[in-house]
Image 1 (cartoon, rainbow, N blue to C red):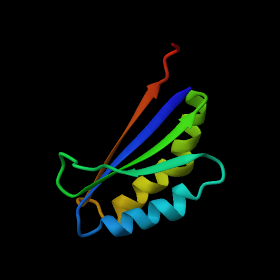
Image 2: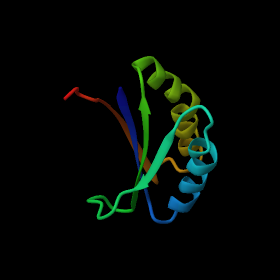
Image 3: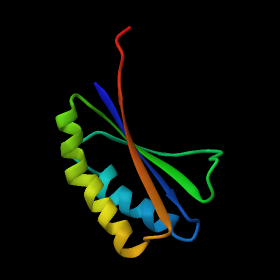
Image 4: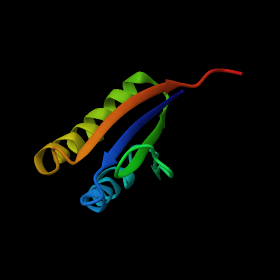
Length: 96
């Protein structure tokens, strides 16, 4: 199992637009179980959010990226190029 995380750092002036887009286009996904979090006491300026999805394989991660991450990147590039930064990370659950 994998945890796929996308961290989104948005300037205060645009963060509500970003949150709305994520909620409308990613959180409501019927294909993936998505957890959307706000980071408290972030070390970054602005607002920091995390989109987290637990997926069974790296192929599922690639699918999520195609369906959701690329459109999010396009939305940000078109309207908020220098106001929003995002990065993703993949973690693998270790067996106990």
